[in-house]
Image (cartoon, rainbow, N blue to C red; front, side, top):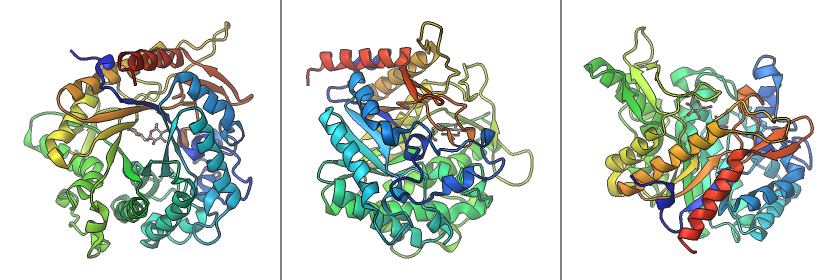
Amino acid sequence: MPNRLDLPAGFRWGASTASYQIEGAVDEDGRGPSVWDVFAARPGATKGGQTGRIACDHYHRYGEDVALMRGLGLDGYRFSIAWPRVRPAGDGAVNPAGLAFYDRLVDELLAAGITPLPTLFHWDLPQALEERGGWLDRDTAYRFAEYTETVADRLGDRVPAWITLNEPFVHMVYGYALGIHAPGRTLMLDALPAAHHQLLAHGLAAAVLRERGREVLIANNLTPVRAASQSPADVAAAAAYDALHNRLFTDPLLLGHYPDLSAYGVAEDLGGCVRDGDLELIAGPGLDGLGVNYYNPTRIAAPTEPGLPFAEAPIDGVPRTAFDWPVVPDGLRELLTGLKARYGDALPPVTITENGCSVADEITPDGTVDDRFRIDYLAGHLDAVAQAVAEGVDVRGYFTWSLLDNYEWAEGFSQRFGLVHVDFETQRRTPKASYAWYRELITAHHALHVR
Ligand code: BGC
Ligand code: BGC
C-alpha cells in the first residue's frame, strides 16, 4: 500500500488559516466591520459570546507566525484576505493600510521561502454589503470582482495562484439557511441564491485573475456521501444530499450546469436567479486547480419527517474528534477517486486545501502538547491521499487545517485545530508534537525527492 512518503516529487506541503479566525485587530488601520463582527456580538450567537476581536493577534504577530511556518519547512501557506480591510465599505474607497498588511505578509512569506496562497473570501463579508442583501444580492458578485482587482493589482506580481472562495456550501448553509454562522439568516432553501451569487463571484473574479496571468482555484468543502442502506429510499436520499453538498458547487464549475435538484422541488435556474450567460461565466475556461477541504464522510438515510429529502445518519464505530466528527481517513481516498470517476478529464489537478481535526489539547507541566490523536489523524489522511494518487488522481499538495489554534466560528475558542497551541490570554505560541511530526515528514519527503 502506498503511503505518504510515496507522494510525488514536487508535492506541496502547506498549512491553512483564515483572516477572521486569526487576525484580530478588527478596528485597526481602517478596517471596516464584517458580518462576523456583527454576528458574534449578538447575544447567544457564539459559544461564550466569543468573537474574533483579538483571536490570535496575528495582525501584529505575523512575523512570529511566519517564523513558525519556516520552522516547519512549509512550501506554501494558505491564508485569507479580509475584504473589509481592503475595501471597508465593500465597494468605494480602497484602504491603503489594509492592503499594506497583506503586502508585508506576502514579502515575509517569500523571504522565508514560502509561496503565498491567498483566499479572497473566507466568510468575512463587509457588513455594508450585507446591509444591501449580502450574497442574496447579485450585485455582491460584481463588488467581489472589483475587490479582486484591487488585491490582484497590488499582490499579483508576487502571488502566482489564488483561491477565490472558501466553502461556498458551508457559507450558504450555515450562514444563510440555518443561521449558525454570520450573517445568521434562516432561509432554508430560499438561501439558494447565495450559492449562485457566490459562484458568479468566483467566475467574475477568475476572469480578473486570468487576465493577469494568475492561476485560479476554489476551495470546496466536499464529503463522500454514503447511503445508510441499499434500500432505494436511502440511495435516493444520499443522491439528493450529494447534489446539494457536492455537486451544486462543483458541477457548474467543471461541467457548466447545475445538478438535478428536483428532489428539493427546485428547478435548474435555482428559483430564477440564474441569468443567461451566468453558467458560461462560472465555468470559464476551467479551473487551474480544485481545492478540496475534507473533514469526514457523510451517511444519509431517507427522511422520517416531511421537509428536506434526506436525513443524516450516524457513523459509528470509528474514533471521533473533540468536535465529535467521525475520523474516517479512507473517506478522503474515496472522495478523491470519486471525483475522478465523476468528472474524468474535466477534473483539474487537486490540492487538499484543508484537512485536520480538533483535539482538547493541553499544555503539560513540562511545557509540551502531546497531540498523538492529531498525528494519527494527519498520517492516516495523508496515506489516503497517497493511495488516491496511486489510483490515478492528480493531487498536487496538502494544506493542513490549521497552523494555529484559532477562532472556530460559532464554537469560539473551544475547538483547537492547530499544529501550534495558542494561549489566548497571553498569545503564547507552543508548537505541539504534531508540529514536530509534520516538520519531520516534510523534511523526509523533500530528501527523497531532491528539489
Ligand atoms: C462538517 C465539516 C464542516 C463543518 C463546518 C461539519 O459538520 O463535518 O466538514 O467543515 O461542519 O463548520
Ligand atoms: C472552514 C474553516 C474551519 C474548519 C473547521 C472549514 O469549514 O473553512 O474555517 O475552521 O472547517 O471547522
